[in-house]
Image 1 (cartoon, one colour):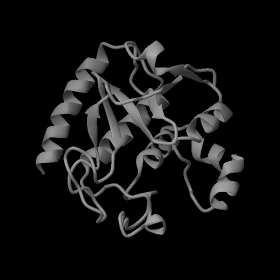
Image 2 (spheres, rainbow, N blue to C red):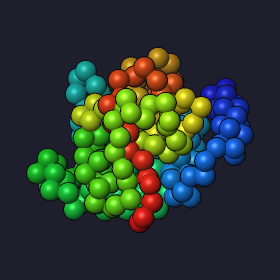
Image 3 (cartoon, rainbow, N blue to C red):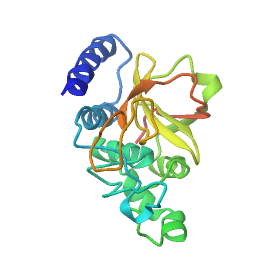
Image 4 (cartoon, helix red, strand yellow):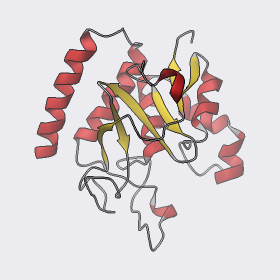
Length: 198
């Protein structure tokens, strides 16, 4: 309950800040809004899927909802926003070579390939754009972590159970498994921005 109240207050501040900012494509905004709703709802937590569970990481449920890992949260957000990124992933050769077609959404190291397939996206290095981030930018450390920039120096992301606010392996969020975090000082190397055209 307290998490929902705090996230609601943050969302209100972000929307005030957003209203005076540069206009964002409606599909990008829909992706951001969906991810923020997931973060505000404790029914959604972190999982890489029961099929990937180990003794050290006893994941339960699915990474495709109600729980998500970092990349599946981003894939689903932009799919729901109106970008056919999951369909692009299903056409990616890695969908078959890496997972034999069994992982519904891609990974942090496949997202750029799938965005390129869609068109209208541009890749920047973190250093060239870190001081000019826009709401809906995708922040990435390929093969490690990915998040969505929401404005005011913050991200919405799935960080797992080893995040600063805690959590557990059960379905649902017992801490900060999917939450809002500071965007800076995190080791991002790439930023993907929708610039239009498709």
